[in-house]
Image (cartoon, rainbow, N blue to C red; front, side, top):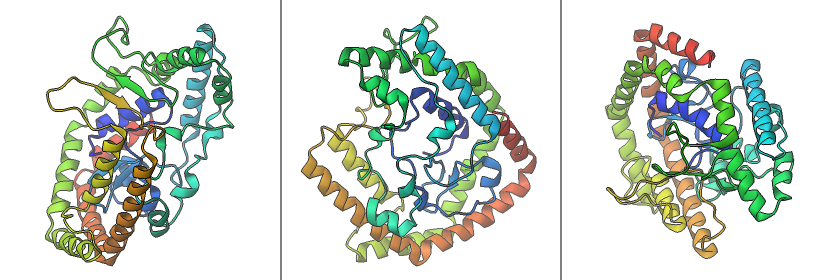
Length: 354
């Protein structure tokens, strides 16, 4: 996900509203990233990653490690839970407000805390090897037990009340233009959770206005990424990486994001999640697809392909690409920070007050 940070920051709240499971692509595994912060990450926040994978600046959803949320942020999350419980009660359903501390450890945390080489060996990129639609399945969550005890029809009504009319049990929401899924104001109806997030964090249009003043900064950051990618040292390192991949039996990859993209495309084809043709009807699914109906033999084959590819990718990057990219990145970011310090400090202060 390339940074427009405006969209990314607002998307974080959208993720909370949709069920805590979030993205239609697998989160960036912490095993893929360096443990230290880059100069720019010091200002842009914990989720900000300038990946040596060449994918540009990303906002990563990380399950393991990382900075713990502040007490102020935890307090806001508690308010969202309390408001959700009250809203669900009004709708005729039981919902238990879950303290955010209880959700601190994801079921995938142990995987994300693996070293990069171990992660690749077991999970590849974490795309087809982890069923992200099951990320929210937590037997310790009282609301999972409450929902599971309901009849299928009641579960559907529960999901609608919690996350809106287009929600399903995994927290995915189908968003499409018009229709009865929108409120009288024309907004997408995200149910009690969406209403609660808005109550605590404010309306989306207001948050967008707050971040509008940073548009120039975000554009400068995108330009910075292009300068890093086009640096001759990175270009030479990418070429060496490509040759290494070919020697390992994976020819044809010219950009370091290509292997991950290839796996994602194969998975999209298996799950039927391939984007509609250009000009076709608009339809976006927020939330990862389930593997429940995927051909098990084909999924197993894809997982083997992903792991073999990721292991070769990780080894080839470690031979010189990672060090070369990090050197260029840190030098460029340090210069950028020196030139944009006032704007970055303003952005950091704004984020701290979210």
